[in-house]
Length: 360
Ligand code: PMP
Image (cartoon, rainbow, N blue to C red; front, side, top):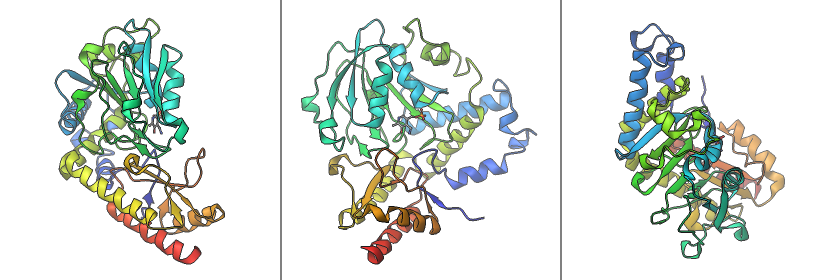
């Protein structure tokens, strides 16, 4: 068996020890005689898996007691709609910060349910930076302020948490959650599709402050209703049991590694060394403002786009997979989430340096 280094933006690489554990437990989970996939979600065995996963996530992020953690379906895209339907609470408008492709999708969906005030946008800068918070036109009566801490396609990341006073802060953390410690108490709602840093696709994590629940719009489907799902321990319908189990294995893996502070150190080191190679080269380029560069998704272009296909072909031959940039921007993108070992980033760097020497 040969495993490659997978730089996919999502579904993304999973930690090898997690996959090995899942393999070992595939046919018979801890003497139960069943695969986790075959268990009733209401049975004792699965409930113990679910509760441990939630507790481990609570520990990792130090989630305060007045927050619920929900294990849902529908992806982050489902939350683009669920957020306004849960959080408008009779108010008329919500603030959004537009920093790129995923912000735009969240805004478009929210417009179906609420008036959207785009309080700041980096469109004029081709979404290559974070708008200066001093320039944001925030509405003190907004139901909430929504932003995208890490734009997966643009590779643009907030390295600070916006200050919103009494207005609840809502964050689409799909491609950054668990990459570093965060102060959950600063947020009203945090949500993330799992398929990057958490586990396989099919699971959506929502962390919600309790006082924001229970005032849904009439149109809100029950399965997206935070209060309904919190009251049912995320089992108002059948949850994505196997994805929940695998996420639990990822949380345990992270705890074993020393938690999110340890992970952050590794992630920053991985990102810094990759950006250093790009910046020290006239052949590779990353256009993002230095203070807004993502630790998780590193887009870069080659000086000659005619070489893109050859770069990707040779990278694949070298076991470096899925480096093609998003179809909307072209070029390359290396997604280096938690599960990408530092050795994978080192191998990519060696390949890039060698390719440049041969082709520049
Ligand atoms: N937000 C961000 C920041 C993302 O990266 C993605 C997926 N790439 C989404 C939302 C959409 O997630 P999903 O496919 O889970 O709906």
